[in-house]
Length: 309
Image (tube, rainbow, N blue to C red):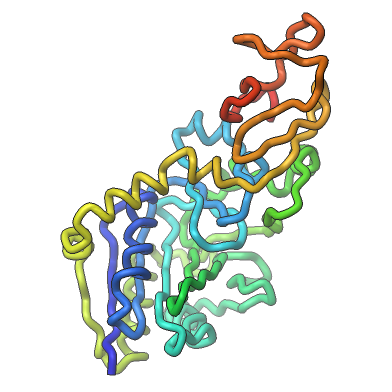
């Protein structure tokens, strides 16, 4: 019987942890199932097929020095910080059991007297309010089920940074092949048990994982994984933090501007299909008059500015 693997990251860089998860999925197929736990520094994580400009107040995020992360799985946008615990179940197709994976998290939370419910959208909810978003990924014979647990996160920051509920903002974006986040009221698990901590929740999940597998679990350190990967972890980290991955992978969309009308955005590049506009250094002009809407020029990366968000 293949063994189970437990990996707990002591690193806080979201791009490094994303790289570690990718390595565990790609290079550790000798294990029947892997449980990976980690906590990130403050960041915003969008789904694989989402639009960061639509989902996130990019200007506010940059002002706070909070990075945007595009994960490999689908689903909606979530906020991470030190009060949020992340978990990932990685397994082969034959060993994947979504019900058991959710039950493990539910069992761990019952240890603190917290009863969670699994919604039809595969969120975990406390009295109807969301405490855990979950997403899924399949590649070849490997499957990933990962999620969040809001324990003592900064919900005010999350609500300020995430834009899905701002209809005035989102209605300007037209999209065909992108996934839009579904706004949900969120709450911390600490509201149900003030004694709950991130480390306490992690320990409870680890204990439930051990018991579910009759303690036949191997532990491997992040340092060991990084050492065995050679340059792979560094290369993955650089890829996941690149503009080309985070913004450039956004599917084709249009943005409705009051002054410029409909702006076509392909791979994060702005273009104007209008003959009465022409490119200057800064700003764009319309028939000789400056237009202070887009910070980008024709063929230039569409970056954030409060003049258009």
